[in-house]
Length: 295
Image 1: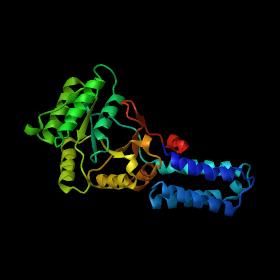
Image 2: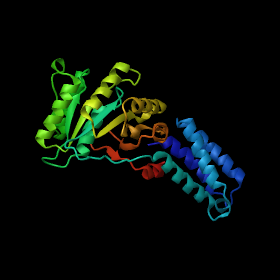
Image 3: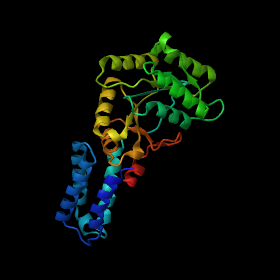
Image 4: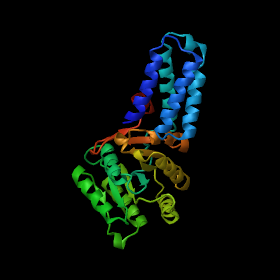
């Protein structure tokens, strides 16, 4: 994860750490390299510029330049500012007073949304009588219904579906929520169909669905490897639908890190989970400080 970016930053900080004393010029040169590394990692240029400016402002103080181990001080400042870039809003899921709590998953086609729905349902599983029900609300892609049913059978999780030829997205969703209540499920996850953020008709369908069911959480699943495309999609989905959180899928295959480092700063929407592998349990809660340390 983020190997390319980590290696480049590691090389910059190794040079600084090897110097006993640091000058303004040393800091300037190092931060130019940091900025280039961030841009090459497909980090949003405004995010990269503001990040470097904040680090520079904190590093130019005499306490850093003339203190013991100034190189380590710079690394510490960079780590703190990285955490700040990744951190915004509330990274927790909140059940609220409504039961079952409704969680609507939205996203582009191919973002890994259906697989993520199953991973998230497994993460929320609290044992017998406390399972999360998944609703197959992607009626345009019959294979999505089959996929969700197969994942449910594999993980022993309940799935609600209807014949796409004789139902609507709203009907299957409302009936699925009723079924979850009947089974005593604390959570119900609505797996909506993938759509492009520029498709007005499908985005309007999503907006109408949200108004009708009033979900506790509306979470966008984005493919971390698509970089700034993921950031742009998140911005548009948030503007049109209103998001409470993000899940970055396929983060384990992302050597650069542009989406992860830009998406919250640009959209203001917090990352809630990270997909870090293909296995059903490869979904981790998001902790900004831990990800900054990895980088």
